[in-house]
Figure 1 (cartoon, helix red, strand yellow):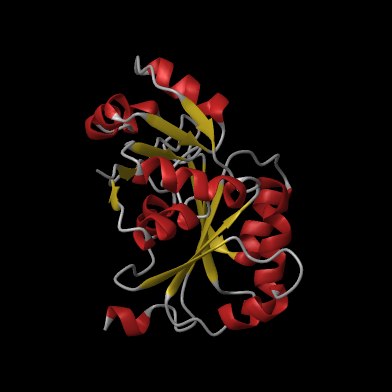
Figure 2 (cartoon, helix red, strand yellow):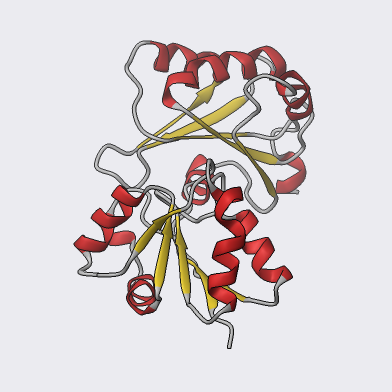
Length: 231
C-alpha cells in the first residue's frame, strides 16, 4: 500500500506560528525531507519530535527525486518541509509534488505560514485579485519581466534578498515610474517586523540609509492604482 506525501509549512519567524496539526503530522510520518537539515532539526527539538531527517534542496532534488517517490510508493509516509514557510513557494518541493501525483500518490498539503500573504494584506493595496512573481530572474529575462510588471493591472508581489533590495527598488522606479507605491515587508512575524510604505523614491531613500536584514517581500500597487479592483 502506498504511503502519503505531506507538505508541511513551518514558521517564517515566530515558532508559535507552528500549527498543532503540523506538529502532529511530523510526529507521525516515517521520514522528513528538509531543505536544510540543521534548521529542521532545531525545529524538531523545540517541539520534542524525533524523526529521521534527510536533505532535499534545490541542488539535489533532481538526484533524489526518483528515490523519494519510490519510498512513498512502497508505503512510507513522508513529510516535506522548507527552511521557513510553505514548500514549493519559491522553495524546493514542486518537483516532488508533481512526481508523486504522476505515481498516484496522495499529496496532503497543510495550511500554514507563507510570507507573501501577511505582506499583501498589510500593504493596504487591493487584494481581491493579485499575482505572485517570487524572485525576479537575476540576469536573463530580467528586463523583459520588469517591462511586463510596468503594465500589471493587479497588485503584485516579489521576493528579494536584503542585499539586493535597493537595486530592485531602483529598477522598479525606472520601469514603473517615480510615483508608483509599494510596501516593503521584512522580518514578518519576528520581533523586529517592519512594513514600510511609500513611493519607490521614498523607499530607496529610506532603505539606502540603513542596514537591511531579514527576508524581504515587496508588494506593489497595480498600474491603475487599484481603481479597477475597488470598483
